[in-house]
Amino acid sequence: MKQEIARDASRDRIKTKLSGISFSEIPGQSALFTKYLADPFSLKSYYPNVVESPIDIAGYIPTALAEYETDRDALCNSLVEINAVLGSGSETMANIELLRRDDVTAVVTGQQAGLFGGPLYTIYKALSAIRLSEELTAKGQRTVPVFWMATEDHDLEEVSTTYFLTRAAELHRAHYYPRTYKENSPVGNVEIDGDISLVIDELFAQLPPSAFTSDAHTLLDSSWRKGINLGRAFGETIANLTSRYGLIMLDPLDPALKRLSSPVYVQAVERSDEIAARIIRRNRELEEDGFHSQVLVDENYFPLFWHDDNGGRNPLRKVALGFYGTKGQKRQFSVDELHKMAEAAPERLSPGVMLRPVVQDHLLPTAAYFGGGAEISYFAQNSVVYESLGRPVTPIFHRQSFTILEPKFAKTIRKLGLKNSDLFKNREAAILDWAKENIDLETAGVFSSAEETINTELNRIDRRLALIDPTLLDNLAKRRRKMLYHISAVRKKTLLALSRKNGNAERLITELYSIVMPNGHLQERSINVFSFISKYGPDFVELLYKAVDLNDKRHRILEISNE
Image: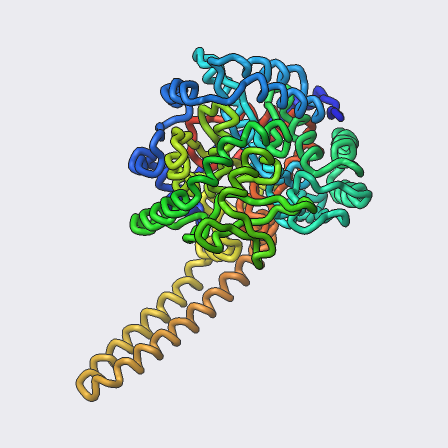
């Protein structure tokens, strides 16, 4: 069901400014991820087909085409049905027809079926794939963008919450957990009940009104409605936002796609022990190189899940030589039984995180994949799964990454004299650093003088004790640390008081951080895109699209300006 938001001439007045910051300057990023961004060729043993820039992937395309064996017509027939149900537009249908040609590849990305489309990075992923497919096509390599809806995942709690910016510039937590949910059900199959309308109404009561708010409300009402499942609601939302760019939506729960996936399932069953052993070795190699393993695997690991008669998705583990079972060993299967199931009833199986990319690239002639930092990390692990199954390792790139700054908060940043790097500290550290920069010289001098004097006198005591009884030195060292700690604590309280006294700096920074680092994470991991669509209209997506720069690997600050 397609419901578009009306466009308005006011969109021409939306101006933007872009700046950036290296991910290495943002706390909490993994060493493997930042290394991959800075020097990808140094990690070639983990990413065999790595290239410097997304556009350089053209050199890998002949390999992707030569190794692709799936029936394109069968694939595209399923994609036509999936996208017709989701209300995808003519541009998408044209791309599906293009994909039938044996010289066409796909740029792929994907995400779980998050509430109301999930966090902002979902749309960033989609636009990254769209832009690369367009750039490759412009250079003579016909390519289409594909979005893999991770509908098979069964962690409903992970996708049931999203956040919005309220009219009071605070966070509104939208949460929806259907009463119809059955434990371990794939999220894509969970049916939406009537409570969803209450969640939507409550949400829009909190959003700032604009010329686009009513249409945004109608769009969510039309996609997130009683009686359909979460996978379809999510798919309709993303299709609506990206249809003009021809993005193809793919639902791996589709029965025909399950049948096409069967050969990979069969191989995974046959080589499950080898897969587990190779991932374990790879994890050890990563740790020896100073990196961490994104996904923990042990010798009883099995790469597939089993779907029971009630629709539950259950992990399988090795319970004896040649036998695999569910948790508590309620069901056990021999290798032969799993092999037959993979051939005759593949709908009863689904891939785990280490196998899913291989299934994806069996179904699609994938030239490249766009993922987040965590996905880049686990691609270093599952490259050995590709190799175990005799398949080329698909190159991965980091999706585009933004923090959206509206005029009010850009003004706060200028008023307080903050830099880009200041925006991604924790809130208290940002307040203290601001206060240190703005403290009067006399007060700062008092603390510095006190510390200097204490250290000088303690050093005199230290030298005297060394002569009298050296065993007393440890006791003095402990007391020195305590004294300096208390001085530091008083300085901290003074700085916080200064921030409150001088222009409400503490309040302004706290308000800024609730938007820039909501819940202590980058904005893109929490805030929903409809926070901005309801305010700026559907052309907000076009604004993001124009900001995409595949050669810029930084996290970028996109400032919206009224000027």
